[in-house]
Amino acid sequence: MALLHHVAALLVSVTVCLGTERAGVPPVAISSGSRDICKGLECPQFTVLNTTDKWELRHYPLTKWVATNATAMNKQEVGRTMFRRLFQYISGANAANVNIDMTAPVATKAIPGQGPNCESEFIMHFMLPFTYWQNPILPTNPAVYIVQTPPMDVYVRHFGGFATDDDYLENLATLSTDLSTAEIAVEGSFFFMAGYDGPYTFINRRNEVWIVKQ
Image (cartoon, rainbow, N blue to C red; front, top):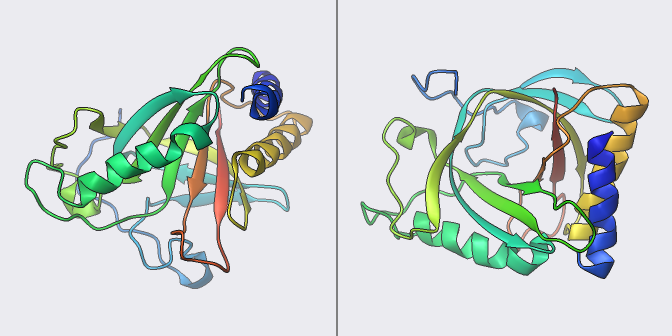
């Protein structure tokens, strides 16, 4: 599987270099007891299509985000810079000079480089609150932009703790191997890392890796 080869290269890199759907009316954030993984924050709507002891398959409809990107050997090098840009946007660095509520998760799309000694592209996303979907407020920082992800089905593996690059990549490798063993076809050129908690949440933290189904 192509993604598994990319994951192997990224694991080496850590130590060596490391829509077709209409926007319409915004959907309602999921909130159903234990399934409220966003802990009171607005988050992308999704439908669970299948669950095993190794992964969960979800369908996400078209979703609107504010995003920024950077290129580096690993996410740790640029994560704080990207987060700061997006946090400044929701804190008033936008065309309306208004504060915008934080959402969950912080989702980072990773497009691995082609070898162990080349950089990868990282695109960090905050979901726009649903009230802004039809008329998004534009950022004032040219490095920040509004984007939408098309409808997609994703395989998800979750884990706890304060996630490092190593943790995401190890869980990604496990998920990729499990899907390959099950002969499930997936998108092999990128994946997502998702974190649901702020820095002052110390227990019951949730992190996820997403691989898009072909």
